[in-house]
Length: 519
Image (tube, rainbow, N blue to C red; front, side, top):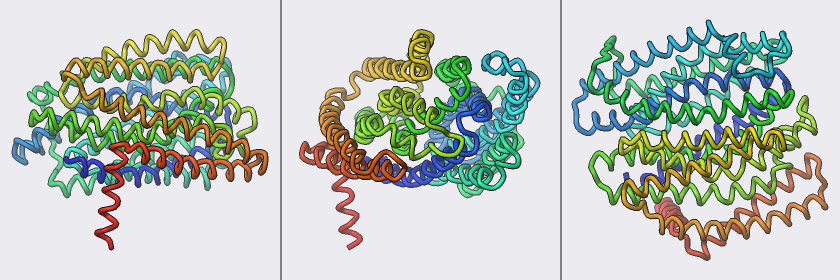
């Protein structure tokens, strides 16, 4: 896949992800409006987080090892072998996930007691958390199937349908929150979430069939490709599981801070990962199959160029977005969440957590690209080891900082651990493939950082002027945020245009060619 194809594929995903993210914000806004920073929100966030905690480990293992192996089948083997392999993966994963579901349902009380100690103080809250968690475990089977089908489509360079599933999920939950939340509460929201995951999976089935796949009742645990996949998966599962401990420790300690603490972390994290979820995920999604293909053909030069391009395109967006988010955090939180049951104190705590989450946002995108680079060359051990060091640091910082900073300390600890893990991964990959092109990345980074800093100064003073002129109510916040965003974008892209940033020039030339063709 060429640079042009990477950019074009990313634009499609960005467009769909942008729609999904805006719907996601509407969903979170409605959740905050209906339930506020309350125990109900904490319980729902805990339950869905628990499922993702368990499944992200398995799902990431499947996704990161399945795509390179399936890419080999597509490049080198016939269709029948490919269909048999895919069916085998679906059936084996299904069996394993059903086992996890049964385990989760049976041992829900113990799991909640262990991972949410703050809920034990109130029997009613504790029992509700147990019941919601039991229901939520059912969603794992649909999440698993959706992960596999997404991997199949992405291996065939089909990115549109997988990017659209987030839109469908948000529609289902928004529909529930608007029409039924007052009547059925948090239990109904749990059922709506399960239905949403089911809809995501069903939507991908027709595309799966159009690619020539068909389901077969075939199970072979001894298949050499399954064994190879499992061997590659084990370090990934361990690494991701260890990384998920960050999430788990945050939530465990948050339950001890007070009511609504999990909700505050969740809402701040949603805002923090908004830009990442649109742009960085799009680049990572497109670049992973590309890196896998170059790796399969042993084309190291093309591999490095694609990797450099992926990192720099992420940074060109994430750097200014991070600085802008830190400066405008309070009006952004007020606009999105401050209404209904979500009061001033909840808004303040969320903006504080957002401030300390933000520095890590830049590095999360780079970390994910570097991680995929390792997986594409079938090295799953190195990311695992680096993740372990990051988690150890996160736990230590969590325990220390939560005493002095409360919820904000948990956010800061997460950012520091992400930064450390990213730097460790870059160092390891440099050693692995004899320099990934660090000088090129640093040269581009310096231009982007200078441009972002200048933009940040302009936005800071403009925001102050807007607050003086229009006040800090909803109307004033909206005017301030949109004015600052508009001016900030102009200033930033004006600066990188003057500095002739390579990635910006390339994207600009691509857009100009498109307009010439249209004319």
